[in-house]
View 1 (cartoon, rainbow, N blue to C red):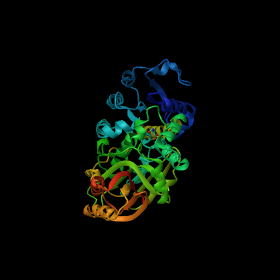
View 2: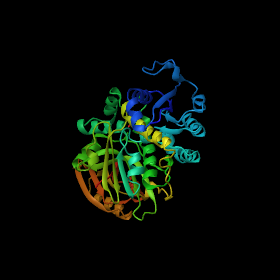
View 3: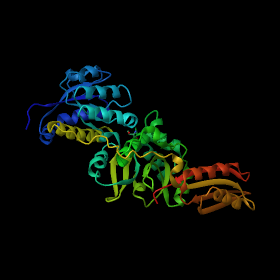
View 4: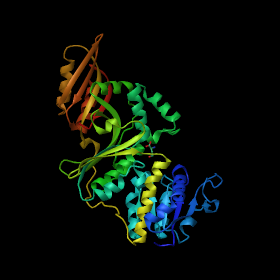
Length: 429
Ligand code: HSE
């Protein structure tokens, strides 16, 4: 057992950082035994040093993160600041000064993962980021390491707890979006500005990271098709129920049937109640991975929060420290397949479309012809009429998204179609 401690710099001491520091202190003996050397919190960089941080020696607290990293004796940097800058510059500085990095920063990894991996490799250091995707759920390392010998063809997941909480409330209580969002805010699940969650940006960043790992190719945030869930209504849930489905905000990553490209997308979708993801309630996350040899795997657990996220950070810390002692590094970026990311129009999926139409002869035929003209095959049609108007619900067979959206565009132009009440993709069948 080495007695000289490995020195750790903590960048950021908010909800996650303070929990990381607490566990490092309270579990110090166990961490030492598991790593094979003591780990010492050598400095904590914060923006507001006056804020009381229980259990952290005030002498360790600094506002000068750069000076902390340039001390020359830091072995591992834990970055839990979030956002692009100053996190990106600080991580680069950490590598330049010989420290491996553990980061929880999904936005930065989704945008600049390739450059950060290259910097880590150039300096012979580690970049680990289990906490960046789905909080406590072991997912990044199982996909990078345990499944490294398999071929992942599809990943479908609920990777945002806030939106899952809102959608679950809408499903179980019949509430509308705003009412469910208000409850999520009151309970602390949604932030005062919920845009990143409800518009799908948070999930899209996680989708980009997972797609890169799953398909051994580079997928950036801009490559991920994204639709938020603010338009999902109580009547969408009523329609979903009639089909034996619920609605989830899903991140879906797929290898094309010919294996020559991949797609990455985030949008709300109906999924059958029999699908394992349908039973993921409240703010939980779950990711369903389909691999050639392993078959179907489901990873489930708390996807956010100080303590669960700290668990993932500490797991990475132990791994990175072990690598340091062995004078080795763990897996770096694997992007050798260089598969292109296809646009959303190439995705093959099903649509559930609700139309308000005139209830008169020939309308159904006109609607059916529009689908046929775009090469989209109809699976089921349900019509409910009232006072010369009717609501028509069409569920299609699988077709390219471009053909489906072209159909909807053409339907909107028909005189007999008063409006397109809702469009929802159907997944997981
Ligand atoms: N805001 C995210 C969520 C957690 O609701 O799942 C951090 O990614």
